[in-house]
Length: 114
Length: 122
Image (cartoon, rainbow over all chains, first blue to last red; front, side):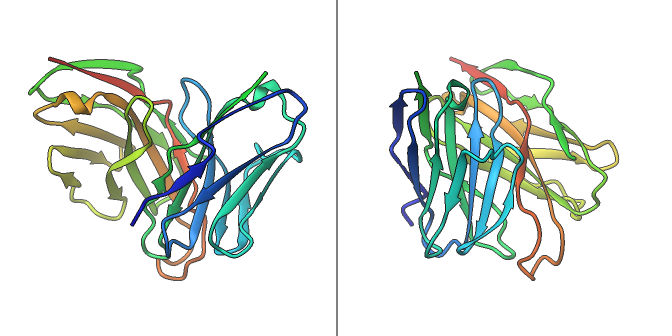
């Protein structure tokens, strides 16, 4: 068990550029979650996958955001036409399911939009 | 919608002493789970302890224990024998459950409070 990993750990981009983040969950965890955390706040839910199916999306996930989990293993989160307000820590978590609901978090990707 | 409130933005405790972090939540759900997560400086979020709402017994994990008061919608965390490594942001989180515990269906998103910054002083 190597834990949840995320790549990159830090990303600096200019406003208007597209960025993509990757999350590798704990192996055999079929549930994967994305959260966003801004300074001084707790994480906020963005979206959730069970295997390859995206089952829930927050209204925080604007049209510029898209997430995929094509083979039910790793996931990507893409932000198109980044804005300064997108600057945040993007956290990924996974859980085993269905009766094991504890979520285990990765180290996060810190995005800075200049 | 669920809300989680942590009324103590910052707290400090002397090493080896005991400290209690407060958390209240608002929900109309009957079946749910509560968690405390720890986020050390520049490090990832770690699950500290969890509590199922249907269990009356308070959860305990080594030096960490909770006081779960369902009627009052309160879920406080007690840290005994505080250690320097306990210095971190602590987040209280709520998860509602919809559907059978074993069917795999339902919503599993976590709703977090704003956190309490705990400093353990040598």
